[in-house]
Amino acid sequence: MRIFWIPFVVAIIINLLLDWFIYRQLKRSTRLPRLKCRAHLILAAVINLLLVAVFVLPVRVVDNGKMHLVMWALFAYFAFYLPKYMAALVWLPSLAFKRKKVRLVWTHVATVVGLFLFGAFWWGALVTSHRTQVKEVTLNYDNLPAAFDGYRIVQFSDAHLGTYNGDTTFVAKYVNEIKALKPDMIVFTGDLVNRQTSEAEPYREVLARLKAPDGVYSILGNHDYDDYIEWPSEEMKQADHRRLIDLQTHAGWVMLNNDHRLIARDGDTIAIIGTENYGDPPFPQLGRLDEAYPDVRDARFKILLQHNPFAWRDDVLPHSNIDLMLAGHTHAMQMMVTLFGHDYSPAAWRYDEWGGAYREGDRVLYVNIGVGMVGFPARLGSAYPEITVFTLKCKAAK
Image (cartoon, rainbow, N blue to C red):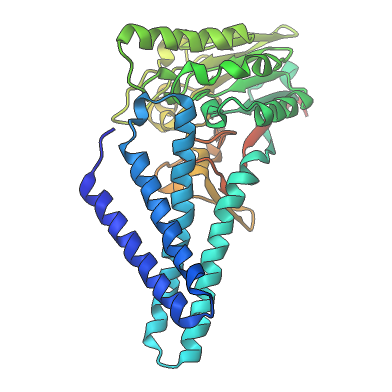
């Protein structure tokens, strides 16, 4: 694993300086026994040593069990230090005051901020990340065939099964929730695994329980191409990639890798189209609309499954008249706050469309923020694992 040693060492030094400062403040402003004050320094040293161990471990070649430990180690580090840095920023203005009582109040406020953030991190890891949210979305169209009025589609995305290290509890929970919604169709919009097919093996039977009258359709996400691990040979990499596709096919899912299917009802049809991952630069654009469907500007009502919402403006809007595109990928960066009915996430700094519904005339993009996690095993604030239920309505049928 490549390490940028200078910023890494600087971060460790700053961490330890902050901890030494906090230790000095604890000694001066509390009646805690000296041993308990020192415990803060000991814990800080342990966390920093853990970070060092994570950085020197060759993450791209370790097994999934070790990868799981690495994710939790990194989470522990950030859950320990980010609240402290935020508390320090809140405390700094107190230096402008000479009165001890004012500075003491400021110190208490900073402490509360730090403790709140620390609790929010662990709540996000232990509670929010396993508490699904079902979102109901009704979409009205002029060109939807009347036979499909009231048609229900359930979307889930970004399972990242490697994060759970073989524990099927949560995956079984949201599979049961999806089944209970009784949709006409189920779609999965990519990133079944974090790095390799072995992560999904324990979930074969659970995933196979997903059934719908018009089928379960799946596409590939950026994590489904075996690019996040170093393989001894290209042949082994491609073999593992085929195993991931076979696993989904054997579960009864229809893989739409630049392909489509027509769904018929009472003599009318709609198209469900799936394209391979369309990465934003510098990642490759593997999705091919022209290969996936004969004429992407014909009059048929069309639904596109594409993992990356980047494709919406770069490819779908200019080159087709697709009515509804369903995407995932962003996770809302697993951090979101909902205020007065509006969602806010740092994902907005990275993506123009990162969560929820976006419209261009009668055409709609919906970005699902996923059910799983990658990078760190938590979902903060209101970034709950999402299951979306779409009800398609025909305006002419009213």
